[in-house]
Image (cartoon, rainbow, N blue to C red; front, side, top):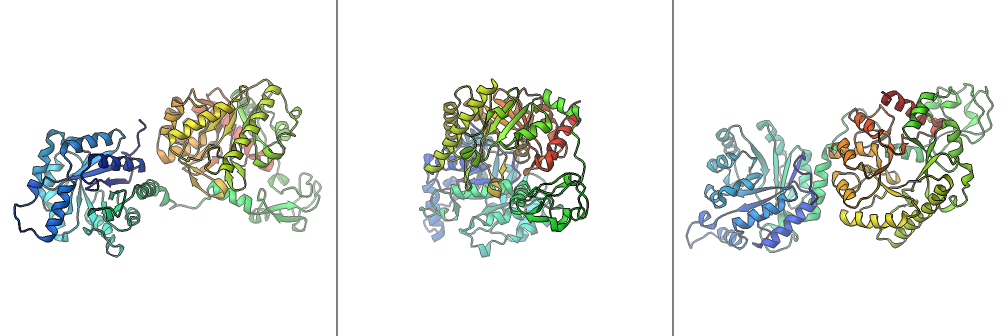
Length: 618
């Protein structure tokens, strides 16, 4: 079974099963399954032995009568709760329980240690005997602070002393209106309590939990239900599994949401938008060598692939060192000598099967400039539809090795998704894969060498098992004539259509298990792998070792954090060095994917090749 990585989360989300199971074992199991699927860190029960809870008196208060009847109706046996604990533990989810008195703990006998944490409800805050008894198990004890005056809370602190106690801000109304949440008390708690602080939410609006997280709580507890309008006392103050999924997503991403307290740098999606939407200078007329360049000879147009407003100022009235045709972009190589690609860097690249990305229109010039023997065609959807059939393979050196990258898009507003619920999108995606397959087959026949085809299959329409099963069938179907289609390892965040989109497939440890299960060949993008490590905190080299037999092709670049993609080698996070070094030892093509390496006469690729040899040829 695929296990969730919940125990190391900085902010824990606990789904309170409570009495929403209606006293039915199977209903409780369904709630637990839904909570697990939403990604929670833990689930929690509450247990009361009625014999220990209420006095034998026919003259009950009206409220007592209601609650007593609800507790009786929703009672689960200790043995049933133990079985449900075991079920949750199979998915690596922690389980806790609330007790209301010491006697009830004895109903579980020695099996009470199956619980990972305990909860003391607000009404038992002054029950120091119960709290100390639970604390004796050496596990976290969450204590709700609702219903009580500050003096009683401070008395609890003094009575308990140091320990594994975690105070939980709580307003014990059911539900709590947002105007009555008093979340400022979390800040007050920080002045009284050194350790972790939690929030026990009975809010009508689940989004109040997000504010609590922003104020610094490290654990949030909230009831889970399938129907907020169901019969029972707790359903109206509960959240559905979909709401829990949103809450978990926010909690898991909070450290990134709240980051940025440092000098600003744009992410790759912003840089892409700057390029596509911004402008740079182009030659309005032909400009000769040694001719002075003035603003009247230039025009400011999109895309921004050359010098912008600020950069151009230092070069105005300077002479060009090369001939410039009208319409050509103005970049630094117009005024400065080209970077030198070292011969040792070329040899190192060849020996390590280093490849460069190319387009159909620039393969000849890049080959002439870099003299490598491996190249990867990065195709656009326009090229697949219009240029691929007409491309003359005789322009290529048949002694070189080639690979092909399937476009991420099938048109200007749709991703490549062969299993889209939109029929036309699915059909066009499959048609594009088929067209590229035919091109790869011809290229393979021409060169006599295998031509790996890489695709970013990034849309998760159902569950992961279904995703991998269907894509395995698709790839097997199209991988004929010895053309192998590879699924690319993806980043945690993709820059699709200029936006930043969190991806939920092909980037985490559980994806590696499915890749192994279905024996799926992949292209390992080392840059994406390192960015994924920044979000999911896995061991990159262990993952590379795990998938060694599946990795048939590679993309490589350095990275910074979760969203700094395509960084020059040696300029990324220090932790990436060993990962890149290990990846270079794989016996497959490795395509350099530094950001916009082809611009400025390939300056980025020159730097990348020189840096690879300088840093890793030791």
